[in-house]
Length: 364
Image (cartoon, rainbow, N blue to C red; front, side):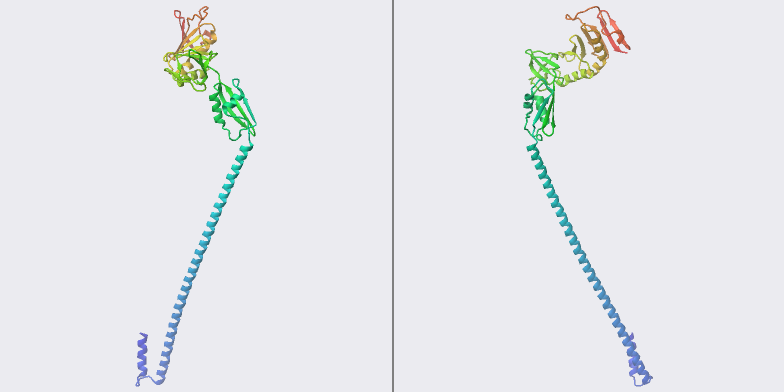
């Protein structure tokens, strides 16, 4: 639009017959030149502004690029430094671990070489000599204090030396070993016809050919499979070793002592003899612990009140204890006596049958 206006003015100024005077046309030409100059100046300013803006944008972009490149470079440097530190730490840890292993190995070798057994003390046994015990354990002076396996040695002593109930081996640093032993007691016996097999309470075989039973309780009505000293007995018949040990445990729990015989001829009619003269009829093994707990007072009072007669105590049903004198050719019978004295039966009902000389005692 501005160009068309200028063109019109030029046409007007160029007309020879223009209504404007020469001065006016000169002034108008001058004004037009000023406008063009101003327009060109503004165009130049706008161009310069665009160039400066473009330059600033380019500089900002370059700055951002340089900054980004710098940050990326810094990140790479930091990552590289971190990785080197990590690798260095790992190397240090490996070196420390190796040094630790070497130190432990050196200490172990030193202990094995230097810490030797100079003294072995054996205590607690009257059955075996110290030499026999050390031979069974495989232990001797000069062995390493560190390398000996005390648990294995204890087991070997208990197996190879049957009359050892318990073995315990302790180190006494720096150079002494103490072997503490407990002798086993023969509390059970089985007659083989040619001798006696002797056992402790846990049915470990102590001797396979003893001349007599001593104070051990004789087990009747059983045979033994392949008896071997130092091993647990295996019975032939209706009762197992586990069942029998439960029976003996029931007596121990109720502190009933002085047992001289177990008759297992009939598994449904088990009989136990106390002090070779008091016969306790138990019946089956079922509820044995309860039966003994029930009959404990009757048994104890019978033992304490009568030391001469053969007595029969029946606790078969576990609810009533029947007590009477027993016909026994080896017993000396005096005048008739009640097994359980009156002064000790407070709270207990007694029923006596003169025909059978029997007292039935039940908990009231």
